[in-house]
Length: 240
Image 1 (cartoon, rainbow, N blue to C red):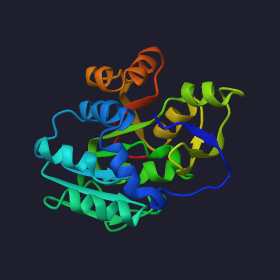
Image 2 (cartoon, one colour):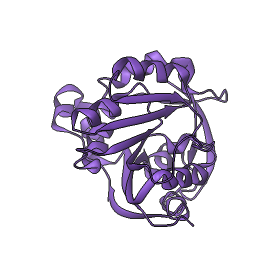
Image 3 (cartoon, rainbow, N blue to C red):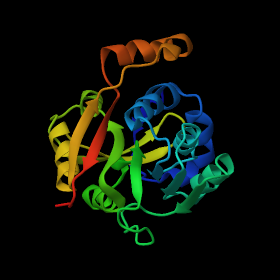
Image 4 (cartoon, rainbow, N blue to C red):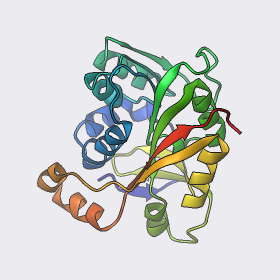
């Protein structure tokens, strides 16, 4: 696990993109916790056109194509992440450096069957705006699979009121400077519904059996308390 240490120097993932790729390829929380949960919520993706919102180094795109998706289009705010994704997934995928808080104005409305936004939403300041754009590019009744920090995890570690909505800036133990929003579940859900989505499924992931072998301490912790929370959201016909 990457342990956070409070700091006040914000930065994006560009500064440590290559280190992140090496870490996330095999880490407990990325490879053996979030990715299995997100991919399970995606369900059968055979023949689907998928948008990867915050694609990182391409791990999710690679898995989605291996499971039969017809095409993946991905964006990430980090140009280095985009380069890593292109190297990892050279066929049936396209990637572009883009801030998700800006319009996806080169993409047609209703042009994707599924969108994936894994561990990204809490890093954005304009979350509802980003979600509305994802709603726009999804076909009617398309789905968004989204994962984020579990609100109780941030609250338990940082203290204060569970109902706080605040920007957190930290340095994690690998020297990564990060910024993200802490908020209660009410606000997480409210922002999704404000963007026009309905909740089809909500999952508090359980750690995989492989984690028990490779990372027993992380497995024991995640069997007691959730680290992330994931949603399968259904796009209504019109966003609000």
